[in-house]
Every structure is written in structure tokens, then in C-alpha cells.
Length: 548
Image 1 (cartoon, one colour):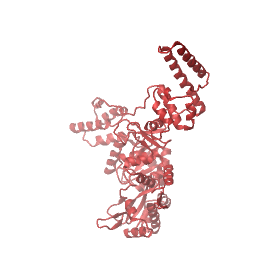
Image 2 (cartoon, helix red, strand yellow):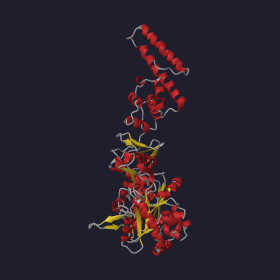
Image 3 (cartoon, one colour):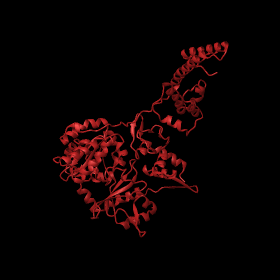
Image 4 (cartoon, one colour):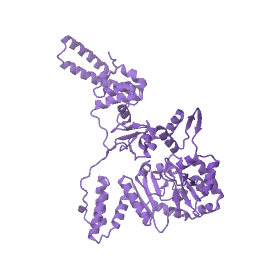
């Protein structure tokens, strides 16, 4: 069983924006972040993540909670499973109680990587390969590059260190054949440790130097390793990405190492796979411009085309840089072409222009039928963009096709942008601000209750009562706390000013009611009018009037 102290320490380490943002795309909305809810069908985003409270809440379906509850719901895991997955993602060691004794989770991948690094120091062939590629010793150390030996040696090492084989299989370090025999997944390969965005090792990439059929291999899919969600060296590049608001995405590990070596420390790479929608949440962080640095061969252009369609439709800014003549970023750094590389990287082809050019270029425009097909495909692509961009790129598509812009008929498009949460009146907002203030500062509840009563709330009496009772799991209160349009009254001065306004409005309404009532006696009516007028006069002078 995981100790409660360990769980609380893990929670303190987690950032809900990073956790949720590793699963879905989050877009900044004021001090919070928004997205379409992953737990129910919707077009306009009503799912809000609040970094201050470290909570999420969906205003559509009511789902809400913290980082652990999100992973539980999204991954369909139990509470302990979600905790262990999150702990692994941030390299956090959990403590367990088994009959009163504590045990620690083994750092298997970290231990294995340290061993790989030591083996690299002893392997001349691997060292020569890295030297020939132009990689400095400092880069080898920074990226934790190592060397994996023969399968039997790896299995023997794990056994000697008493690292559990079940955990090694689970984390993709070794595999198990149909005959039940164990084998190492990385054999006679230079190893590149792959980290989570938080910095924990979650797998490896391996490059053969002894002629294995597969030039590169990656760790197998596991609970902590999903190559479609990870980017190589993101943990090292993150600070530069946030600072520069730019990210270079390459196709290989060596490209990243060499780019960092040349000062392009905002470079990352996909893990031997195409850029997919699952990468977008990670790419969205820090809202950088994306530069795709791909090979200029047929395969590289096809990959850039697919990625550009995805990125442009998802609203990313940036462009494509293609490396022609068989060169790649690593080659240019090795050949001391850093200045030319820098120029190239700062002259990308914008995503939309690249997609249109590649799309049109695949048709024979001298053939009227082919030209018509190109027109339809181009229009289909434009329809994936926002209405503004559709209009901006209509003439561009027309010019590439050599047709009149009037032929680019896009039809009616609906703007599905998120609509702000609206409130019916100022009184609505004012009442909710009192509720939110009580939730934020519960110690002032009694002071507020000296002047306010639930009967004074015309719109949100249930929320006011729930706040007074301090109901921790009330979905309406959770939704209110996530709503940044509702302010909190700050300090004694702010609360007093709000009370004066609220009470004056309330007693003014009551006075109007009394004046129109015919069911009470003249004497009683006169008495109530005098009382209300006295209260309103005192409030206008800045004096709070207690209940009673």
C-alpha cells in the first residue's frame, strides 16, 4: 500500500497543466487553460484547467478533480495504478507499507542507463562512431548516450543487481519470447535514453553499429512509454522553447544532439514515427512556433506534408525547412555550416503554403480533369482552416492552380470557437462573488453572516448555503471555483465595499415591495418603511447594518 505521505509529496511535485496537457491540447484562457472535454462529446470547449488550484472541471458534464483523478478517468486505472504511473512520469520514488515496512520502487531504467554509459566508455567501436558523426564528449554526457551489449550480458546485469524481470519486461527493457525465454531489447546498439517531459527516463532508442537489420529501434509500448506522445530531448529543450517561443522538430536523435551542440537548444525529435495528433498537446506548451526540419527526399517531403496538414488545421504557426542534397541538420553542424543552417531555419515555408504547393504539385495541371481534382482537394484543405485563413488563402490557391478566385467556393462555415460563460445579470455575478469569497477565505464566513442571510440571495441561494456548510465535493461549488470570470473580494476593504453595495440594493428592493403591499396594516407598513429607510441611509454613509 502506498503511504499517504508519499501520495501528498507526489501531488506537490505534479503540475496539473503538464499532466492534463500530456493527454489533450490545452489553450490558454486568461489565467486558466481550456479544451474540449475528453469525457463527453462537445464542440465548444467547456473543460477548464486551473493551475492555481491544481484542479480541472468540465462545465458541460461536471467532471472534475486533480491530476490523479484525471489519469484515473482518462486511462481507466485504479487509484494506486494512476499514482504509480504519475510517479514514474516525474521520476518520483513512492514509499509503500507492507506489514509496517517500507519499500521503494526500483529505478530500473535509470540503473540500466548508468550501466550503458559506463559500457560506452569501454567500447572503442561505439566511441569511434560517435566521434565520426562529430558528437562531442560533452554532448555524450549531457544526453546520457550509452552502449547496450549482447543480450546475455544485459540479462546477467539485471540478475546481479536483483532488478525484477517482471518490471524490466513491463518497462520495455527486456522481452519474453513465445518459448518463455527472456531477451534484451537493445543488443549491440548505441543507446539514447528517452525522457518524459518531466525528466524521468521512460525508455530508450538504439542505433545499431554492428549491422543489425533495423538501424534504429525503440522501447516497446508500456504504461510509461508511448512514442506517439513523446519527443526526444524535450526535457532538455523545454526551457529554450519557452524562452524563444520556437521549437525545431527533426526526424532523428543525432540531429537533435548536433543541433543542441551548435546552440539550437530548442530542437527535439519524433521517435521514429510520424508526427501525430497525440504529439500536439506537448507541442502546444508555451505556444511556440513549430519548425519542421525534415529531409528533402521523397519520404521526408511526404512526412512534412502530413505533419503540416495536421499542424495548420490545429492552428499552429510555423513552417517547413527541407534539407536537400542528402544533407541533414547533423551533417551541416559537423561540416561547420552553422551559419547556413541558421539562415535555413529562419526561412521556413509556412505550413499552409507548403501544403498547397505539395498538393498542387502532385497533379498534372495541363490535364483539365486532374486540375479539377486538384481544385477539389485544395478546397477541402482550406475548409480545415479558420474562416479568416480560408479567405486569406483563397487567392493563393487560385494563383497556384491558375484559375479565378471565384471558383474557390468554400460555402458556409460555422465558427465553433469557444463562447465565454455568460451570466444573466450583474446581481448574478455579485452573489457568486460572495460565495467564491467564502470558499477562498472560510475564516470570514461568520463576519459575512452578521450582515447577509440566504434569503437575500435571489439567484444563488443553494450555492451560498453549500459554501456556508463547506461542502468539499459540491460540483456547483467546484465549477464556481474554476470560473475566472467570477472575482473574489480582496481584503476587509473589498468585502466591506461589496457588502455595502449588495445590502443597499437589497433593502432598496425591499422598500419598493413594502410600498406596493396592501395586505398589511398602515401602522406596520409605516414602521417597516422607516426601518428600511434608516438602514439605506446608514449604508450610504458607509456603515454596515447587521441583521435583525
